[in-house]
Length: 498
Image 1: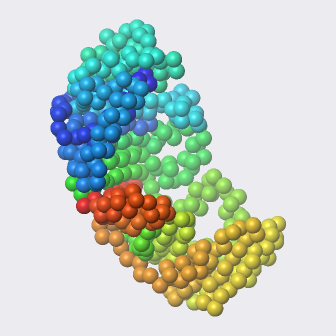
Image 2: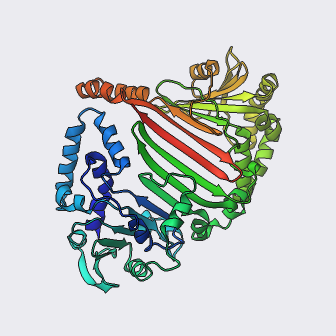
Image 3: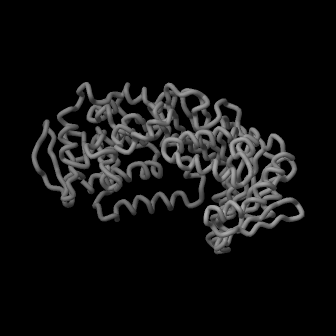
């Protein structure tokens, strides 16, 4: 079985590098046939294109060709497959198989979600109607041994218990022999998936994407014995299907996802609803994240804590009294519409949030800092060192912590950082929407400057000086956003390559 899975795992990478034609076109019924082995109540189902002639793979090939040394990398990769110890050659053994979608599923496990906490226990089911070639050669190599026949399939089993079955051009593999037999005997039954079922799970997402994933949260939760408490949270209880895709275009690679909910109000969603994009402060060499409606995120966290850790909410009120403020009214309620945070590659963070009444929040912060050590003493914690500079910024250092927290009101915004200079900088920088994004959560990064930062940390080696500029010159942008609505969440992330 391991002999089968390894070359199949290499299919996507191989296609991405050598996609230039030479493959049979995918059959319209092949995906439906492969899905027919998969239970409808599977936790997740993945369909992966394997047709080298498909536009998705051709786009990836074109994108790779933009970068230096692409041809050498392709050749080295193909040689790597042949030298992997699998005795599998791309041209002879993999290429003839390509054309139809490969399906991988996580079926429900009798012992609960994923069969336990160890990822090695996760059950899986794989089905692939190949376009030709000798799939049985892969199934019978190595430690696999022939153990019989089921529904006309020749069955092979590995010492680890995993099994694979081959019939004509179709291979079906599973974590256990029990799963495999059930898949083979139940093929096409009413409780098995169809292409229509799979497409319905994708919702509005592209049906032509390179990789498509569907699943049902209620099925996942039903297979998790520890989920009973979580289902008391309205949003969790309302979760239904999800879908996700990875797609290529001539100008880059994108990933989209969609989460559907039912019976959940807009206020119960984790993010503020509506298409208006959150504003972001963009800093060279850093990842910027914008959040519209931060108070709603806090409210959602509290709704989860009310179920999972009710004691924490009581502690919040207790701490608020010790600090001399009402946390809900004076802190959370004081936040404005937008907030943004910037992360550097070396771990530095700077955040800012709009305030409804900056002058009033200054007084709130003064009260908190005045009572901070009193609150810490009442909690049995050592006192923090609190200093206030001429700009009104507080620096709070906890015992044994090498990195202080800097917090204060600068102009109209609240700033929090691990350095005073970063706090002042982000306060003075403008936050603005990122073109093409929408929704309460937005992220953006400049890949060019990030590559430059990485190379600086690597030193001025000859290879870095040559490859770095050539690599970064094609990286245009990395943007993403998540939009919330009463019926769920939808997100998109894209790396643009020019």
